[in-house]
Image 1 (cartoon, rainbow, N blue to C red):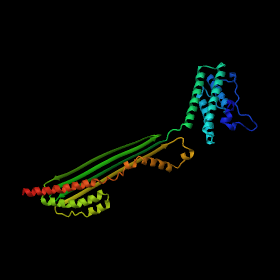
Image 2: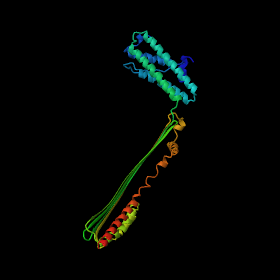
Image 3: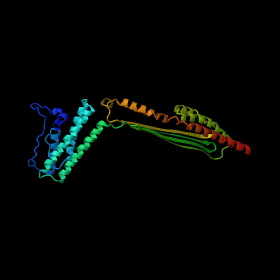
Length: 366
């Protein structure tokens, strides 16, 4: 194909216009005296016109620019070539035809730059700055064409990322305070704090795949009994009797049955001559958070697939993540949240045993 046919190949719409059966070709004057102004601006204008002539780009009047604007030249040429090739691809042209268009574009660029360089060298305006601008234009255009061709025929591999992170914490706290008729004080305190972090990620790029998983658990448990005074046998017995009812209230509360716990608390029998005052403070704090992120990219999908509904894309990604058992590695984080109740019961049993032991010691002492 001859270079003179490049405009018709890249932009066939310009081949025929009303009242004009010839392809549009801008008028170029090789006489440098017909230009005026800064030398760099003059050379850039001349090079731009030569490239327009070689490629068949229809030029429109533009505002004057003060310097050799090689970036504008590069942009104009690349925009024109990319637009023509992408349009041809959308119209069903095969890869060979697209490669042929790019090859003709490169020939046209070379022709335009060579003609402009030769003409400028024969004029009085050519200097090192202009020569550098021409070379930058040449490099920018050919580099841009190479990148464009690579994006057309060498698609990037599919990328997919699935990330999931979960956090949960549970804090159980119980305080029981007894004041006897004689003024003795007994305080039983229990606290159980637990937190868990889990995270998993799956990444795929082309044929490379990777899975990462991490987990961190923290737990703090404390229990204390303080006695201020000298408990007699009747006071110890009265406290032990109340511990049974207290345990029922605690069981309901820390199992999440708050209404039932409230009703049981109202039914507590503190009508005892040995107990002057009793308070119970039960607290439970739960915190949960979960983050999931899905990312998938394939910049060169067919148009129909690229416009696929978002829910379909996420479904596909989720299924890929399941293949690596990510979901099974992140079980329900609430399963363990009430484990502290069994520990509390153990401590309440210990508290009862503590007072029973006091009774036995007093009995043996007598």
